[in-house]
Amino acid sequence: MTTMVHDATTGAMAESRSAGAEIRRGELAAFLRSRRERITPEQVGLPRGRRRRTPGLRREEVAQLSAVGVTWYTWLEQARDIHVSAQVLDAIARALLLDRSERAHLFALAGAIDPSPASECTGVPQSLQLMLERLEPFPACVQNSRFDLLAYNRTYRLLMCDLEQVAPEDRNCLWLAFTNDEWRSSLVDRDETIRLMAAKFRAVMAEHVAEPAWKAMVKRLEDASSEFREIWARHEVLRPGDKIKVYRQSRVGILRLASTSLWTGPQQGSKLLTYTPADVETHERLARLHALALAEEAATEEAATEEAATEEAATEEAATAEAAPAAV
Image (tube, rainbow, N blue to C red; front, side, top):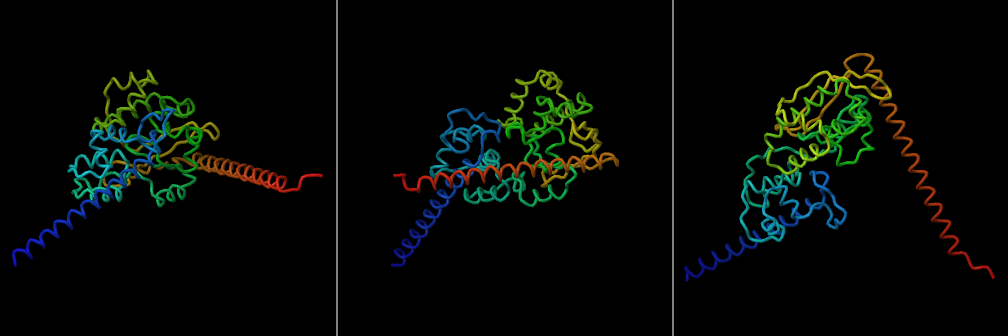
């Protein structure tokens, strides 16, 4: 009798554990799909193409970015009962640009221990956005280790070129330094600046050398710029550092700025990059640049308001005409 009770209890516990594991796999599958669908191809260095129907990334693209087999990743999104290593989860977390909370959630659902719980947070929280605004009129931005611009304030938007006129997939400082004429003309010592940028990029890439997004960035630059190909072939490396930078802003003149990098986490991943004036003239010119940015923003908002009002009036007029009785 005791044996039968014990067997029944053991069976119930096993069934409960099985049901719990199934629920976690379902949650994991749904979570992966939701994260995949929110990322644009441009964010991870992939071409969009003309016939994209899937919102965000495709499964095979996530598999490519994380160096995981397509079948294996598909099984994860299908909630299959498979074992996933911490290394695979880490690669998927990086491919999906998960922040720290999302990364922790991923490992918890998979029932695995995160080997790097303090990994880079790729998202830009609202608190950091607010900090960027409060630093105005000083230019400031949030940049990841690949030189992608994740966020910036209004003064930084106009510092080297109008970033709002740049396609989102092109908002990368290294790409702009080699391919954007307005950005390049703002660099007073251009040759030295772009050489040092390429050297810093190569030094940081040593930790990401097998990641598709990094390799895609280098390939894209090599295809677009013979100057980059020549500099890249030198294999120069340089660790990041802060210094006085000089820019030729097209509307306010020469700006001498002290740059400071503030890492947003314990790892050298995303950083808050600030520029403070190195002299009185630069301080005054930054104030003028900020005023220009505010004026352009106000004009854009006013135009949008007028357009919305015009469309609303046209809609009301059409509705009135449709409702009016036909003339006899």
